[in-house]
Image (cartoon, rainbow, N blue to C red; front, side):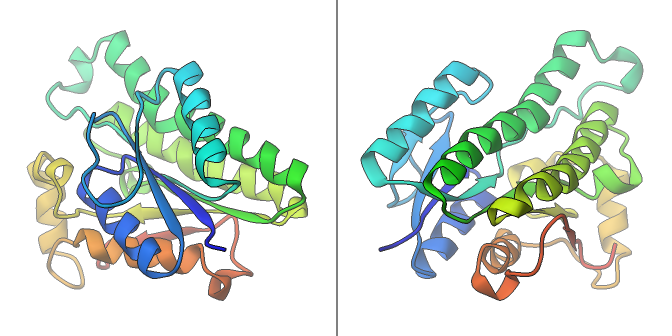
Length: 230
């Protein structure tokens, strides 16, 4: 029986690439996105994940429709580069933290509880960012992704005894709509990276596919750089 893999932010280019890749690896990929319609031929559930009650109901519906969620890719995120730090209002800070940190915290909690109750192993992968390691001109975004990196280490340490592995990826500049909005300094960093280019969504999906596979069975609490050597 195929393992159920839930991908949040599934309509984005990284989400789509990961849904395709995990489906090819034999998972039943299930997407969650704020968009009303799905972007591919996998089951799609519309949800504004920042509404935790709706998130819980959506995860419960997926479990009811498809079975125990064994893989969770916390990929949904938001990014607001338009305002300088000195002009960022509290609601923008709160919104960024809600989606980028609060959602993966509680989505992982929901999935982990059910895996533990069922006595089954599982895998959680979080989307961090190079911005969470080196800082960012979009200050609240960088802070949120630094929190994701620590969340990954902390969850991995807490859940490992139950056979649940937790890892993160830290993408550099990727060829997506979000990547196109990245400040020029980040684009110049990508040009000056070891590989001299930005990454593609499929290159992120390949790393997620590896991390959720049995080939990565001894990897947990790790953050994997996928940034071309930037």
